[in-house]
Image 1 (spheres, rainbow, N blue to C red):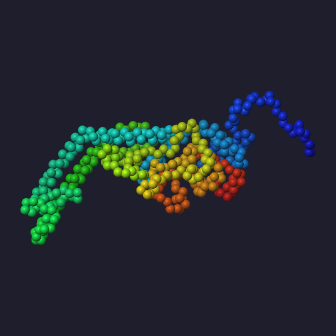
Image 2 (image 1 turned 180 degrees about the vertical axis):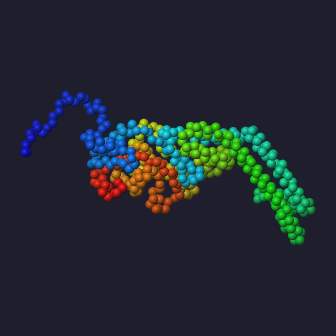
Length: 438
């Protein structure tokens, strides 16, 4: 039955006495979604599921504050969740094009980065002190003296054979040179060319015979030179290792629970010992300087010991909640930046940049579904990331099969994040019916 209502019946009247404030500024804002009890129950249920592949689609009419309400709701839940790990990238000394990903407890990533910067600074000072010390000079001289007698014996033997054959043995930048002696004095090439042909032939025959005689002695001499370099090299490694050991021991103890850091520190030590000459030359005041600046030129050999901290969760009080308004490929998945060096675009592990998916890892990320389809490759890459539970930094051009400059392939990191898509009901129906992986 249809009943006509009067104005008084159709109007709801509230008593001002029920309002316990003068202005709304006195009220505490609500942190919950009003009038959506069923949606809240579904949201809580979805967030409790820890198994792989269970994510959430929030459907509603645009302009109703869906995203803001969801973010506020997630932030309340995230307060009680654990803070996720920090993530760093470090140099891979065996394969520089494949930087290592290092996972650390929250806050330890920043400490690791700062500790390595301090290590490089202290290492330079420690090496300078070690190699400028009187103890090093004494050990080096004692080492060289032990080989000097053997070298002198072989040198005297070579000089004697050369003198008996009428030649003077001289050292040159290209090796040992036999200079003929005529009338009691050595002659140069111009003077040799002015000699009679038969005398030139005699000298040449004597030289060839002498070279055959000296073959064994010269080989022995080169072996001694090589032995000298090897002995000095081992001495330098021993001295440097002794200087580095206290600093590395502190770092290894501090990060003893992280195997990746321990392995990296071992690689750093090996690299320092293998490149002592370039490190010492770089820090020397006598190192030659270019007369003009070269933009983009990197000459510091210790740059490979840096730590690229891409995710720093030291300030978080719970799990991260990230709302990405513009989910382009680079903003979502990160990128490797490039810089120009000598006309070419190059990159390395220090230029790896994180995306919002990295920052949301271990927590929640809210994405507008329309934005996923507005940016090429993003939707398919997001599905692959969720399915593989791995977050990779790739070049978009590479996935499209386009020609690209030389890049790097950083190790993927473990991905554990609840993805919340926000969109229209129509988009949900299309994905539900057309995408088997949705």
